[in-house]
Structure formats: C-alpha cells, structure tokens
Image 1: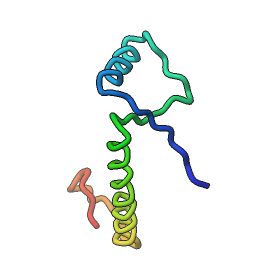
Image 2: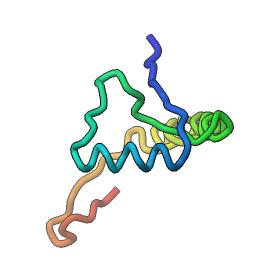
Image 3: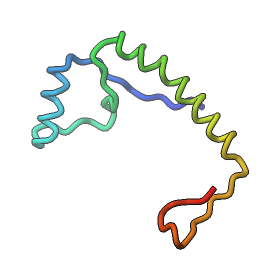
Image 4: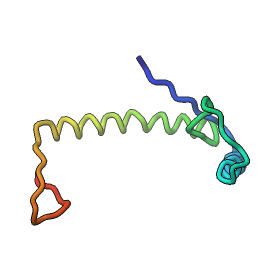
Length: 82
C-alpha cells in the first residue's frame, strides 16, 4: 500500500503569512491540510525527481552496512567502532 502525502502550492508570501499566523496562534491548521508546501508545480516536480535518488542512496547504504556490527568503546565515548 502506497503512502499518500498531501502537498500544497502557495506563493512564498502566502506561505510566510500562514506560517506566522500559525506561530502566533492565530491559525490552527486542520489535520488534513498539506504538510509539505511548494511555490509552484515546477518546484514540486523538481522535488519529485530528487526523491528516487534519495531512495537509491538509502538502499546502497543498507547494502553496505548489512552485517556490520556497531559497538561502542568506553575510551572513545560516543564514537562508534565499525
């Protein structure tokens, strides 16, 4: 089942005014309103072209790290040893 995300198209000024109204508490977005906003359909299509590249990168990272055990060395603190 594919996940559907609503997107909105608004001018930069309209988006700015909406964001400020939300921050001031003057406007509360409805649950079903878009979570992602774009200035134009062209901007949205550019973002959609990038998405498959991100998915490809995530898959490559998963394949490269498959079977890698990560452990923590007490002397190194937060740094991990692969």
